Every structure is written in structure tokens, then in C-alpha cells.
Length: 278
Length: 246
Image (cartoon, rainbow over all chains, first blue to last red; front, top):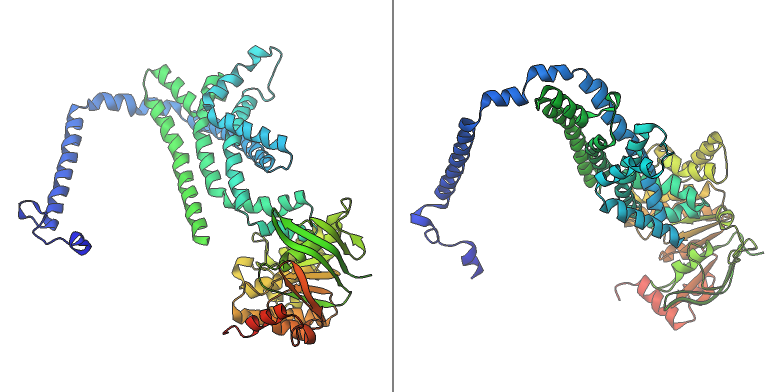
């Protein structure tokens, strides 16, 4: 029965008596024909001149240089780095709190994580932007840089806390037992033995987190930035309105990809290397 | 004063009574081997001696200090107890040398140079002086276990605990680990060894303790417990271990 179903007689089930190989060839030919047809129709419909003018306008793009790199990209990198450092530290703290034997620490940490993973990052940024409305005297240190660091840090901490927790759990229990049996106190064992191994285990997801944060840094757009504070997204948007031409947005987008694609590649390499080790 | 003294020790995991009233001592310089079927509570007993498991009731004394006293500084007691695990538990992110120096520096506050010197000596002792810069993953199981012994020895313990140190090893690697342990015993180290190696127990142990179902059934010199057991349960266990084909 099964054998018959797996290998039907060559004639059975073939349309018009075609061999399976011929059928496959025809099917592939149809797919290519369809693709070529769609591309041809789109190409003939497109207004190449205006597309070139709007999106690949060399003059407009050149006007953004070198500020695209010296201001916009630089700020994006700074915002991302600051947010990442805060998110890393706070995330680790939250992950450790989730393991605490003091129940209220666990509750605080899981509540924080639930809330900040559930909210859109944009809402957090709007909230931070409007904090001075609630507390008129309030000034976040570092001005916009401080606000951005806070916003990106608070959001990424929640995600990183979950990543770190997985990492901490992946370190075999014997490691802690060995450290404690040598007379190391709990915190010293955590710092010297457990955390370094946990961080190593989660380097690939942490790299992915960096990519996400790099993109999320564009949300600072909503904080109101001065010319010196603009990052890639806002820079592109401003340039686009100045020239009434969307080319700068495309350029900004490509600049993001310049960073995110290699980083994503690195993350995947690290991941497969780690899998190979197990 | 005995190195280890245990009085009426009970340990239960939930409804499961693993240790049901153990009384037992280890004198300084003695090698005591604990044998018995799996699930008899011998590993749990060993882990109660450095409080990796907390006894449900009863008392544990090490060098006269009561570990079961809630006010005791357990880290201070553990400094004097070396522990060797079935799964080696070397610190995977550190080199062999660092595995042996880290607790010396962090716990005993030895200087870096001194810790390295002592590490070099203990690694030499277990025959792995040339592996100092390797990572644990680059070593065989037998080599890892010998590093684990060196790591514990570098702390100058007054007692070494071995929890089935050769059970996770390929048969051809068991010999190296046992010969290191034999040498330790010859040097006069006090040792408490949970093991299935009857040859080692017979040859090296001053006393052999047979445990079954959470209690000590028999306790005496190896020529008595292994060669001429009094209890039927000991005979039955030894029959299975020494002649596994039956």
C-alpha cells in the first residue's frame, strides 16, 4: 500500500502523459514567464525620469554630505550606544532581580518587563518628551542625549532582561556549586563565574538587540531635536522637506542598511558558531 | 576532634526521605569510601558535609565547627573543604590555570604570583603542568577531572570530598584519576569518597561505609565490609557490582 503511494506507476497521475521531469520544466518556465511579464509591465508603466529625479537625485544627495555622516550617522550611533549601555546594565539588573529570593524584587522586575515589552517604544518616547509638562522644573541630565538614553535604555532593558535570564538559566547548575564549594560567596560567584558565561551564551541575541535598537533610535524624531542633534531619520526627513525631494530619505535608509546588514550578518555567524560548539 | 562528625542527620526532598538518621565520623588522615546502590543517599550525604544540600535535621561538624548552626559563616568553612564533582564542573570560560587561581585570589586573597606558583605546583602534581593555558573544553574528561582535583587542592583543604569522581569518565581514563587520588591518600589527605570503584576502595580506604535506602548498613575496614560483609544487603550489592554478569 505505502510503497505504491510513494512510487506510483510512471503513467499514473501525470497530465497528458508528461513525464515528471517534463512537467517540472514546464512549471518552471511558466513561473519565469510570469515574473518577466510583471517586471516588464511595471517598467513600462514607471515614469523613470521622475523616479530618477525624486529618489536618485545626485545633487540633493550630495548636499547632505558630509553632514549625513559627521552629524546624522554619528548621532544615531551615539544614541544607540548610550541606550544600549543603559539597557545592558538595567537588563542585567532586572534579570538578577527575577532570580532573587526576595519576592518583591521578582515582582518589580517582572512587572517592569511586562509593561515595557507591551508598550510601543514610541509611547515611551512621547511620555519622556512630555515629562517636563508634568514636572515643570524637571531637567533630565544631558538634555536630549539624556532623554534618548533614558528612552532607548528603558525599552531595551526589558528585552535584554529576558535574554539575560535565558542566558543565566543556560549556565549549568554545577558551575555555581563548584564556585560555592570553593568558598566564593553568592554574589562573587555570580560576577566571576555565572554572568561571564551567561553573557557569552547570549551574544548572538544581544547583537540582534543592537540592530533593533539602532533602528529604534529613529524614534527620537519625536523629542524635538536641534540641528546638531539630528540623527539619520530626522536628517533625511528635514533634507527632504528642504528640497521637496524624497532622495535624502532613501539615502538615510541606505545608511541604516550600511550598519544593520553587516551587524545582522555578524549575529548570524556568531549564532551558527555557537551551535557548532554544542 | 574528628574532621567530620555527623549526628542523626535527616534530609528529605518533599515527601521523599533520602537520609534517615545518619551518624558517622571521619578522622583526620582517614580515607573513607562510601558505597551503595544508586538512590541510597550517598551523594546527598556528601553534599550535606559542605552544605550544598541543607540538612532537614541533625548536626554536621567540620573541624569542630557546627555547619548546621544558622550563624556559621559557611563560606569560611567551605574554604577548608575541597569538592570534586562527577561532572568536573570546571569553569568553562577560564583557562586551566585561571580555574586553579581564581578562588585562591578571590577567596584566600593570595597575590597573583603566589596563586600562580601554587597552581603550577598542584597542576604538576596531577600531571597536567603543560596544560595550564588550555581551556577545559580542549581536555579529555580524565584531564578535566584532574584539573578539578588540582583546583580544590590549591586551596589547601583539610578534607577532600569526592562525589563519584570517575563515574562520568570513559573506562580507559579512570586509571589516571584514581592514581592521583591514591597519591593524595598516600600523602595523608583526609578524604571522603563516594565511589563505585571497589578496587580503589579495597586498596586505599581505611574504612568503607555501605549505605542503602538512606541509612548506613555497614561501616568498617575494607577487608571486612567488602571481603566479608555481615549483612545480606551488602552481600547482595557487592555480588551485583563485583560480578555484574549475574
